[in-house]
Amino acid sequence: MTKKKLVVFCGIGILLALVIFITIHILTDKIEERYTEEHYIFDKDFRSNQKKPDSSTSKYFSDGMVTAETLNFFRIIERRFAVQSIKQLNEHFNEVGKYLHYQFKEYEAQRLFEFYKKYLKCEIEIGSNQKYRAKIPDPKLILALLYKIQNVRRDRLGKETADALFGSEVKEREYLLRRAMIIGDNTLYGKEKENRLQKLKRDMWDGENIPIGEADNPYNRFQLKMQLYQKDLAELDERERKLKTEEFRKDFFSKEQIKKLREVDDQIAKEKENMERYRTAEKEILDSRNITKEEKDERIKALQEKFFGKDAEAFRRREIIYKGAEK
Image (cartoon, rainbow, N blue to C red; front, side, top):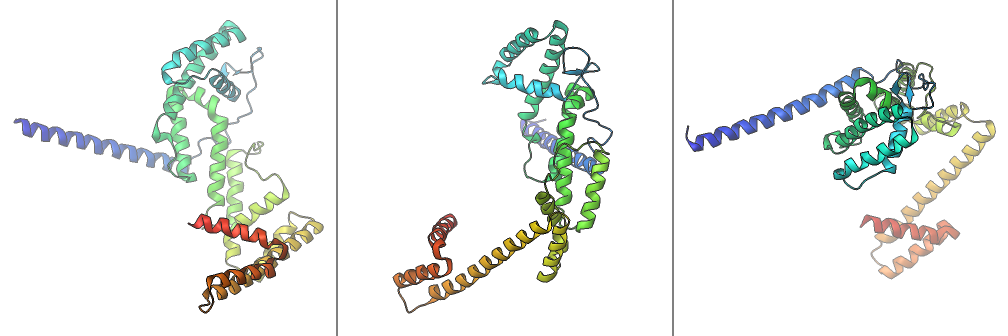
């Protein structure tokens, strides 16, 4: 085989290997995305708060296994003994080892130290690899990425350890992502979204206290209702939309609160109408061809005084900022 043919042959081999690598990478991403479409990473069977610490002095072990509390502790000591470079990792481990042996009994200190070293090396691997970073803020893709990262942890730390450390955190993030996917689905009507949210709660928590993501006051719950029924409201005319909004408000607010909200609505409507009238009059001045720029500026200033009164100066400042941002 000639040297030229050998070079061509090697080039084809490298290209083929690259194509295979990219294909496997894409297929892996699709498999993970498909998995999270059909399965939960952590469902109701994973009870994040069911394990209690051992009866020993340590709160970082339960039935001989680390817990979510251990993860919080690891992150504290990771920051406390932070180093500037990965080259100083051994120095970091030396300092952490000394600290643990000072704070805990020999057996506990040694176990925590072994878990910590595996934890940190795994997190460094994940944090330094671009493929574990979200490229776009798409909840569906982020969910698949969350599953991929947890699988890496399971591979490096062992499934039981990875889930004991990160399970609670991953479950909360998974819930928020799935919740956001339902709320943001513009193809669904409000009732279907509500049904899917209830199913999501049953599937993932089944009566367990949901620690994150739930609307915590009447106003936030009302805003969520409006988000859920966005498609329904968009298909109504203005009068019907107002009636439906009033109907929703009755579910969350008192009569006195609803009265105040109506007053706010009226004020917003008046301000909107006033602005529309101002823009129409302003456009007539700007489109005039028989007056100079200085005259236009004077007339517009007078127009602003007429429409906005004592707020005219504040309006002019906002206009300057807005026009500056457009450039």
